[in-house]
Image (cartoon, rainbow, N blue to C red; front, side):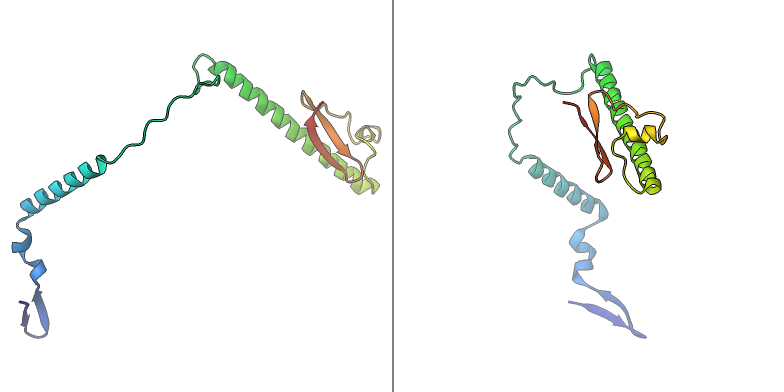
Length: 147
């Protein structure tokens, strides 16, 4: 079934699966490929579908609303401002506490001592609804919700 023409070595092998009679011409090959792909898509598309999720009754909005977008935006800006003030004030105060510790070889008793020793002009105010929680033993400063 295999025909090999030998000359100065193996030049060409005719294998049965490479014969054009098995596949036909390129036009019929494209047609068979198209039919095969179409059948595959039909089989894949005819699978069992899951039931659509039912809407649950809640008081929360389903998503962004064009009418409340300006209010939502301003609320997000306010929260971002509050967060950035908290981070910046905490970082600045922590830096000042570390400077005090390096020069005085102890942590300040409270944040007002930073003002009396002229390390700060005044203690910054925490963001609205928050307060500074300072631990004099470890020199750590946190911003927590005021109660």
